[in-house]
Length: 156
Image (tube, rainbow, N blue to C red):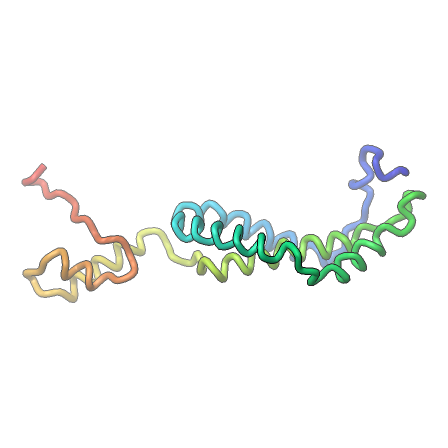
């Protein structure tokens, strides 16, 4: 049972096929802070849905055969320290990457650049007549929080 010896994972070979998966996972991980910052309400809703779906699907057996098969082959030769974790890595990292992709699809792309709301408000103001009310601006900027005008120098 050499599998528990220090450094055993360092000696495990990683296939070149895993490198793009690891790179993509790193990119998605970097987007997590953006999701938290830009979409906290969406994340909270998704978390509640996930809890409900997790409870509902905990008794399902989908994917069990695939998981057992994936875990069976890497464990062969385990007692002799001759096992290969590559199939397990591919399966496990593939699941993580799929979860990130599914998550991003549900939340939406984080392609919005900083200042997008400001640009949206400025474009709406340019389309409005010279005299308008905040309600007009709110209607012209759907899908966002109501814009709050900055105090002018005379009201400060």
